[in-house]
Length: 398
Image (cartoon, rainbow, N blue to C red; front, side):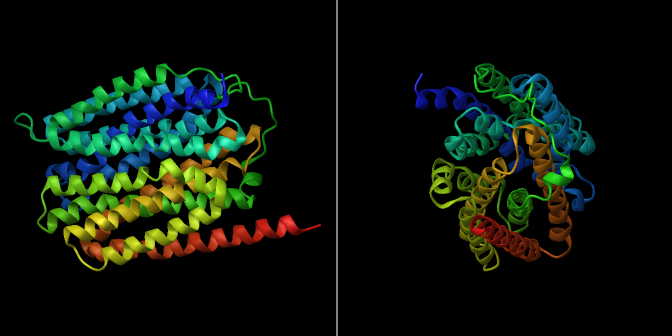
């Protein structure tokens, strides 16, 4: 099999698995704030169902990595999909019983599913030649393009089916999980050791890994990009409801946002190969600032739609750039530990940002939610400049 054929055979099942998982994730992102607002007695808790997704993700990341290290990628992905099926059952039951906290628990299992699914992109990077890693990561993330269309569409078409609003939307998560089983079942063991099982290289302590400038830069990029994106996205449907827009309007805005998140994936990998991860990340930060300027200038549908497109593109550059930088920061023996710690930090920070979004929106409003992002972006910008300077200095040192 030629290089291109091997690339497609290794990566395509992961792209499909990502697409079905991400469809469920986007559906939940579009609706959980609204469902939480309907179910919660205290409206300040409305974003809790969205926030606990990040808790579930953070809690699952390290166990998922250790499980895959011992048993391989494919069994780990299947276990994650099973958790997604359970999440669909619990959230649907919570809506049916009008039980806010059962709905919250179901969303936490969505997060656990997401925790296992985060390793799709790493599995893709490990299954191809080093020169193709950024492209493989980018293609897996591009599975979200399918999800960008399917997720909000399913949300719109199912939310009013039957007598209980949103019930069939969450039942569809179980169907999407079954589709993911079919996709991941096509994943084959790559001859270049695409799993972590059996890795014999010596492992370094995490304290030593944390000292590597590339690792610090990767965490700063991925965590800040995800935190800012999730904080604003979580608050958007509720803000639009307060501004008088309906669920269809907010679903459409989220759909455009998600297209902004994933459509650039078709070329982000090539940009990283040509210009380097750091320059792509810095560009992502500047695009985030374009979102802030739009969000602070008004609450018309144009401001929400265009601003969230920029929010998505900025996240894409920072997240894929951070992941590409991460894959260059560890040796083979440190792979599982480094990936797990990186993604744990990303979703720990994202969890804090989700809770901050609900409280800030309830007490101070939409503008403050967006202004909170500014110091985070400035910090990430400074860290990436420091890393770039450190890297250049090490290259010219005798």
